[in-house]
Length: 281
Image (cartoon, rainbow, N blue to C red; front, side, top):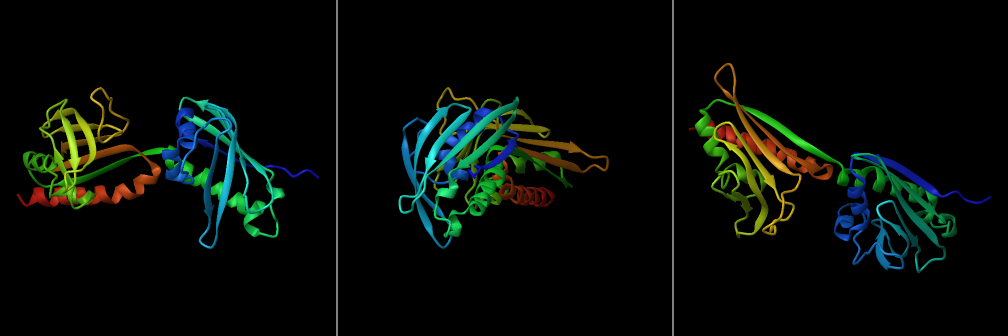
């Protein structure tokens, strides 16, 4: 009986171009997949990498067999130190403006030495389910962090603290988080560390003092003069409550899901610092 290929499918809340780049761009692949020294989505391109578990690492040798952007990518998958030959195929289907179905097929697994449990279909099933249902999902799908806090202080005091994060609430994101900006609409906003190295670069999209501030971020920390900002932005809104206090709300995103768990507690800490400093004035 002919062995059936291992198939894993998943639909992502992301456009097809974004998913295609995630599975073909070397810099993006290392964020969720394997770290490759070099990769090109071109028929005939050969590449190799190591992968395994804490006990053993295996050298993988591959060659791109089919490349039809942004719909299909196939490459051979073998281990030079072991017998066997398999083919891995990624197929993308546009399910909507921002939805993409991925079908991964891995055939030929039965040709590998079955006395080694790492080469059995059960092992590959666990591995591909992790990559497709967890790692890639958390890389291509995004979330927006939304937080708010009640502050008993004047709007002017709160806003002054907000515009001066360096050495204050900026510490929530690292001990050396400083910002340079005159906060005028259209002006740059540059986050640096103690050494002056740029960590983030944005532009003031909208600023209504003591009410609302929006910073749109560039994808590159050193953007070209004609570069446009990316999807990520930070929005700060201050509203007065019925009892005379203020509610400071922030929105940060969209961020890849893999980063939101790390950033959420940072924003909690930042808001607590803003509250503490504002109420002490």
